[in-house]
Image 1 (cartoon, chains in turn orange, green):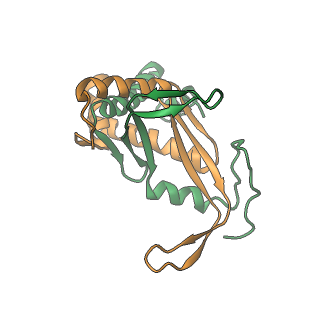
Image 2 (cartoon, each protein chain N blue to C red):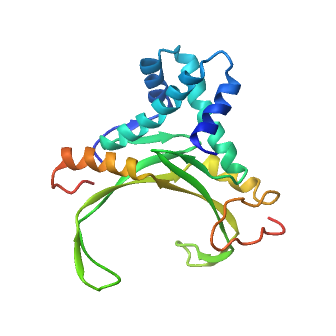
Image 3 (cartoon, one colour):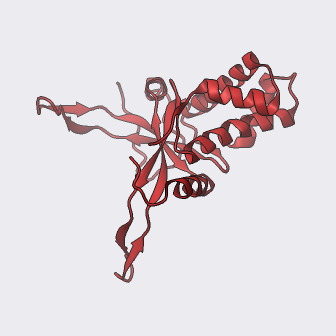
Length: 108
Length: 113
């Protein structure tokens, strides 16, 4: 895709600019938000953020996989996976932003 | 946990901040992520995960009820890939704590790792 990659530092910078907190405190708050979400998810609790989306946990049973290099069958242990479901607001904002700037050229 | 509970938890952790400021902080963070994706950027939060946008080309779809073919225009879909650290965190605790989310085939927790 076209652009650059944002990181924690960019999110903290947005907090500095828009809320007016000191940089180090903004960084801590970004971290705290992510830690809180991770913590709830690790407890098996779904996290729903209105206008953004929801993070849920799925329990996967054991299944047989294959080492793609050797072709050997290997068991895949039961595990929990995270699924993110974007809200319609998020999808709409992304489509509004990208179809406007991108026109018909298929993006890669 | 929903957004208001997240805000509440962060407020409790930061008693010196006004509740409404915490609300703004949380909203700024998530708005910033959406704005970035809407520009075509990606957002990579090490240890947590990465948000990217995938392009879906226009295609000829079908109404499954009537079988009539409908044209589906191209679209962009947000995608989240879980970071390694968070993925591990989910599974280290998988044994003692089965997920509380109600999902279709709730498989009973494995006896041992």
